[in-house]
Each structure stands twice: as C-alpha cells, then as structure tokens.
Image (cartoon, rainbow, N blue to C red; front, side, top):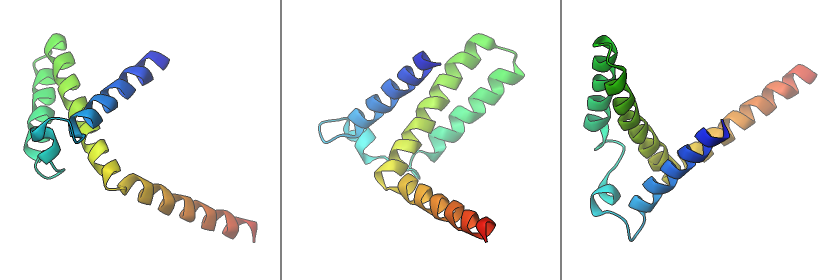
Length: 102
C-alpha cells in the first residue's frame, strides 16, 4: 500500500508542477469546468473497456481517468475547497459530539 501512496503522491506532484508558474501553459489555463469533457470521455472509455472485457485497455483507461481525478483534486485544493470542506465536517462532528455529551 505504501508503494501505491508514493506513486499517487508522485502523480499529484507532476500535476502541481504542470500547474506551476514554470509549468505547461495548457495545464495552467485549465479549470474544473474546462476539463469536464475530457473527464467524461475518459470515464466513458473506462466503461467501454469494462463492457469489452479488455483488461489491458481498462488498465490504460483507468490510468487516464485517475489523472483527471487527481487534476480535479489539485484544482479544488488550489481553491481551498478541500480545506473548507474539512473545516465544515470538523465543525459538524464537533457539534454532534457536544450534542451526544449533553
């Protein structure tokens, strides 16, 4: 599992590097919205690979889809969406805990 975490971390680092000031112009211009067509295309290609029972094609398409998932996560992180979501969940859990203690 540690190797998977390391590889996922490497993928996140690559996407962040592509989005950095010295990164790729195309990647820097992308938004969550502009990537939707590509994300959907990859999801459909995964489904097609499953329907075709093509494990080699599925492996490739899952990799492409994972790249889009990571890209979306990096974009959300850049907008602090994950931080806000975490804080909201933390506050909700704290309120529930206080309610249970009463």
